[in-house]
Amino acid sequence: QRLTMETEFLIVGAGPAGASLGCFLARYGISGLMISAASGTADTPRAHINNMAALETLRDIGLWDDCKKLGVHGPIIRNYRWCESMSGEEYARNFAWGNGERMGDYEQVSPCHHMDLPQWLLEPILVRYATANGFKLRFDTELLSFIQDKPDGKITCSVKDNITGSEFQIVTKYLFGADGGRSVVAKQLDLPMTVIPGGGLAYNILVRADLGHLMQHREGILHWCLRLHRDYPFMFTGRMVKPWNEWMFVVFPKGPDSPVPSYSNEEWGNVVADYIDDPSVEVKVLNVSKWMINETSADSISKGNIFCLGDAIHRHPPTLGMGSNTSIQDSFNLAWKIALVSNGVASPKLLETYNAERQPVGAQLVKLSNDTLRKHIAVWMALGVMPPGSPEKLRLATIRALKENSPKGREARKNLKEKVDDMQHETHALGIEMGQTYVSRAVYSSDELGPYKSEGKEAEDPQLFYTPSTYPGRRLPHVWLNTPIPGNMVSTLDVAGKGGFSLFTGIGGDGWKAAAEGVSKELGMEIKSVSIGPGQDWEDAYLDWVDKRGVQEDGAVLVRPDFFVAWRANESGNELERLRKALKSVLHLS
Ligand code: FDA
Image (tube, rainbow, N blue to C red; front, side):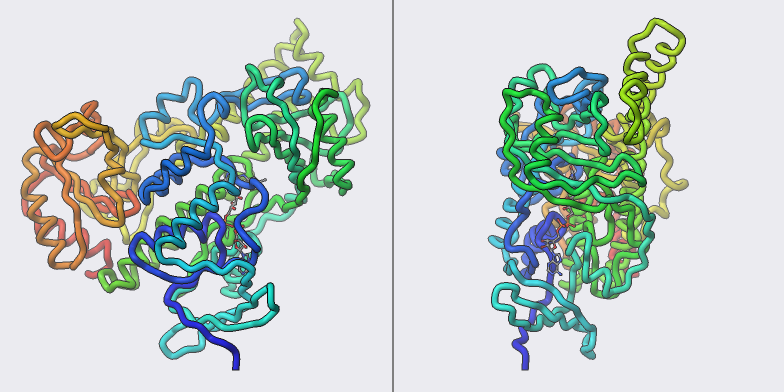
């Protein structure tokens, strides 16, 4: 008879997806168990760019300051470059991550800012919060398989303790597969996957090398080194891990017919030194690892009480820098639904909306991350990158042309500018980061005149730009609020969230406050009502809410615990009935 333990909530995986889910469930007072096959948190830097949408979720549980202490932002992350080598000639650069001319666009839409916070620093923050607030974590514990064999629908998981080699069982009501790119849960659940083959194998070379003197006036966390003067069969990008003495060099195949060769650590050290191209720099290789460039997304991401999230359902290259960010937002979307269903406030049908809302986001991420890699190839070609084995004369022909006063030169410069400009779709993809519109029964849009239509700059380019809107299914717009007694300003996002629904109104919206209280009592769930305007609970510091609220002063905007708008009412009147109807629909109670 195998040892069996029981829990209601079993999370498999303690990476960004699993550990953040532990945090978000714990904030609802839910306790459970996380297991991870690894011996600890990430042992290499891995994901590093943390965007505002993901950081807002961590701000909601009080982890923003912890992230700020360890992450770097501002000038250090300002540039994205293409150069011959780390010390060599620069061919092009873009501003990145909310710097340069896009700074205002970024500052206006979030109380958080982009930062570079490598996964090996982020995971301990998440794990500490989750384990301090109700989740137990067992490392070196691997899920082998599971069956759903109990009459009550519970799931029996077979698990191995990788230290002692002993196997035991965990019986759980909810199972969360946050077990990464080789997910046992997704595989055994037989989730249908769209797989586009052919990405190939890439390498990460983690090194200690002090490049501080090379970074003056060239600060940035990503530097594509082309090394056109050499004939390497791969492409190379230098990524800052710790300014400026720890780096990850990521090696990509040049094409499907030129796989990255397998080198010893010493050989990789020599290659890195050549790409740095400064004999005064000492290079110490700390770690070499390989990974697959995937283009795989799940067509459905849950079945019954089993949910998959993170890389288990979206696998793609690091281009676009959104893997960990999206994984954390998968968790944030799921946690409030699980909490409301497990405490009996919402119908279990609410859980089906996890699939409706997050599957399209994951599938889009996989496509766009790979499209971004394909766009990089266009930049390489605009700089003259050739297939391996091409003679030096040909390899340098484009660089020479770029400097020529000739029609060929003008054409080459025009082409390079076009391709580099297009890379803003990677480094300033504000629309992709913030512009999701959820279409599901967890939002109530029946009172709207039609489906959501992009406005402003977002209508021109929905990848580059994001126009805040309170249309149901969009993110609550960030607006700075002041108290009547001046103090620290807070964001609308600081007022909303915190594990509950909130109802935003303004002068003349007293009826909504009463309705929120009434519906709260009826449903056994707190709805916080918030009034914005002169003399109200909060003052609209920059009179920004007036532009962004999307309803009349006496209207209302109902916001879900994950900051997405559930419903809005253009004006006051019949408040109790209208709010009840919308909320009951969102909770699948009608
Ligand atoms: P992740 O793989 O991190 O975690 C899986 C967890 O499951 C681990 O705890 C593991 O031990 C556990 N596990 C696996 N199988 C198990 C089993 N059978 N039983 C128990 N536990 C099991 N993203 C981003 O947002 N910004 C970026 O800049 C980058 N950059 C980047 C660079 C490079 C080089 C790479 C390779 C990747 C990135 N990414 C990224 C992607 C990012 O690393 C990735 O998307 C996240 O780690 C996904 O988080 P998950 O928690 O889903 O999986």
